[in-house]
Every structure is written in C-alpha cells, then in structure tokens.
Image 1 (tube, rainbow, N blue to C red):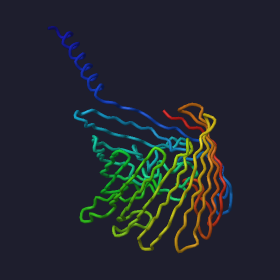
Image 2 (tube, rainbow, N blue to C red):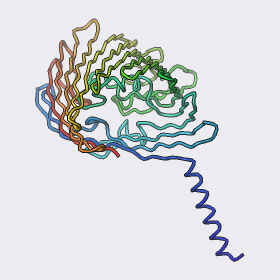
Image 3 (spheres, one colour):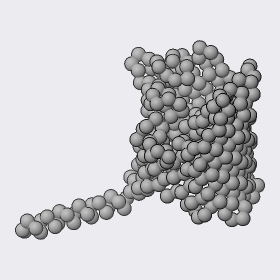
Length: 363
C-alpha cells in the first residue's frame, strides 16, 4: 500500500472518529449582549446628575458561554460549563477580570442529580431566580445587596437534584473568592490555607418546591472570612450569613413574586439587616412585558433604610431581540447611601431617580 493511500485512510479514520465523538457529545455556544444609555440624578455628594453607558448590566449582564454534555451510558452524563462576563461599553472582562468569571465547572449527572466541581453559582443565586421578576436589572434588589446577583463560589463542590416537584442543592467552597479586584466581583478570600481550614470557606444549601401555579424556595448561605478579605471579614472566625425565603404565584400569564433575605454579619462590628421585595410581571399584547417591583433594605438598630421602586417595559422584537426602558427611584433615610443603579454612587441620605433605555440580544 503506497504512502498516499495510507495517509488517506488515516485521515478518514480521524474524521469518522471525530464524527463518532460528536454524535455522543453536545456542545452549545450561547450569550447575551445587553446595553443602553442611563441617566441618574444625585450621582455624587454634590447632587450632580450623570449620563453614561453602564458597565455591569442592563436587564441582564452580558456574557458568552459554552456548555456541553457527553452520554457515558447507563444514564450517566459528563457535563461542563464555561461562561465569561464582559462589559459592552469597553469590551473588558467582568467578575474581577476573570476569563470565565461567571461559571467554570465540570461534573457528572444522572437521575440522582448533578455533581459539579469548580467556580459555580451557589444556592443563594438559584433560590430567587423564579420569584425576583426584575432579576439582575440595572435597578433591582442587586442595588440593595450586590452579592445576590453575584452569588458564585470559587473552588466549590456543588450538587443539584430535582425529584418530582422538589429541588435540593448545596455547595461547599474551600476558598470562596480568589479575586482581589474589589466590589462584589472580587473579595480577596482565596482560602485553602494550610493550618487554617475554615478560612474563606463557604456553605450554601437550597430546598425548593414548584407546582404548576406557584413555587417556594429557601436558601442558607454562610461565608467565612480570611486574612486580607474584603468587607471587614479579615478573620476566619468572622462570617456573613444570609437566609432567604422566596415565592411566586402564577395568575394566568401574570407572575407575582416576593421574598425576604435575612443577613447577619459577625465581625469586629456586628450588623443585622432585612431585605424585602414584592414584584409583578405582566405580559400583554403578544410582544410587551411590564415588570414592577418594590424592595426595602433595613439595617437593624440604625436609622438606615433604603426603599427602591422599579418599573420596566420590554418590547420583544423577536424571540432573541428586545428593546426596554427601566425607571427607578430610591429613597435613602438616615445615613443610608445606597445607589439606585448597580455599581453606582450616591451622596449620604440622598434620593435618586434614574432611567435607562437599551437593547438586548441573545444568541
């Protein structure tokens, strides 16, 4: 057999092997590109207004992702997700400049659930997905607690399983956040420290029930501090705990969602707060959706209270492209200084009004 024939047979063998692997595996590329122009009052201590293209989010944070599964036989599948966030206004990477900062994990799945290893969303993130009608909108409960839409854990083992109408899940992180970028994207608590097993560890858990017309979900989340960690959690004996209870009801196509997040920070100075929200989502005239939500953050034993009211109107040009306008108003009482928009600023005790108009495309 001459050399050219041999080379041809080798090439064909490679092609057929690749086709066989492809037939057993499924890989999907997906993403969201979402941005617009925002106007916000009282954006500094002097009370000045600002017009800008936001970096963090519009109705959803922009992203590109890859996910895939492979059938291993006997009902067992291998799976992976790689997802990167980015800022449309500058093209820069999000989540503390991480390559795959939104999710980066590999795992196995069968009828008993999925077991995942790597950076992944945790149970606090999942608990409010169906009840929080505004989601990670530019004006949303993420303004009152920036952790909620960024509830991810580095170095984590995760489990998630659904049995009939019930869903249970948990994550355990050996080092909850390796980024030192600051803000919710990075809190500099890498953990995995010899001789300090508790440093920067995190535990989250989820129990949820979904019926055809309603659902409830509760999550427990405790993250521990470590040397150099942000938000004053500089010791492994310090902790930040959230317990959330969320629910929704469907009235035809209309959804009513509500929730409570009870938060306790035990550090050099202890802090206890409650965050409440109530929202409604109403689709009409085939292409329009109106969302509205009121939320309130109260820091206990202080005069700090922030109340946020938001409305959003979306027009779906197609299944993948939409135009939207969001209106928001936040009222700060006492010495509260919670900004209306995610990643924004406001003077102490000042109220803010904002509006953002933009376009979202999914693929």
